[in-house]
Image (cartoon, rainbow, N blue to C red):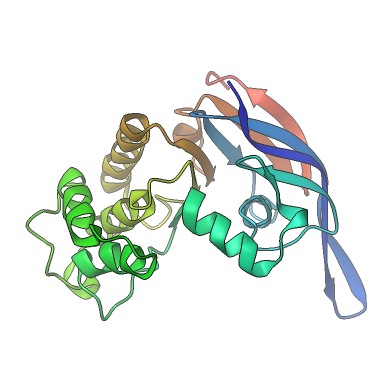
Length: 229
């Protein structure tokens, strides 16, 4: 299969006062189309920073990232935003739903802004797939955490992404609800043929993926670990 994400010798540092903090050092790996892939490691290991760089939300100090066949270093901010809108979906730990929009609007409005004519129909279908057909007109404050994350999952898949990035997607959920969201995420991913890259502290969740990359102190300490790890 073709590589949908290729990372070569990535480096990233941040300045803190007079000090320079090296967050990522010489990171190289690739993810193939339709693959499920987990990035694991302790807090402060650089997982979320790496995810942001791979998605083009930030720029590395050095190294190259090729996302969906396009080198991110060659794109300006607007061009990277267009690529994300067309090819990438996101799921976050804190849901990031707009509180003034209903569940249906949270999924359909991003599509409408992209000029998708069937935005409402697509949103209804996806919310039905995640078991929220009877919650379309509910606002986030009227939904449980698990329901809010299911809305976020529906929104992430709404643009038919080639690649979906999930940052601690079950981090704010109890074990039972998290398991339901995990199952939903993997089922939808398989059904729609998306590539899935998950950042997680949850080793059980990571083991559900085909490959695992382990970070510690901004460096890769293990790559392509089997699910038995």
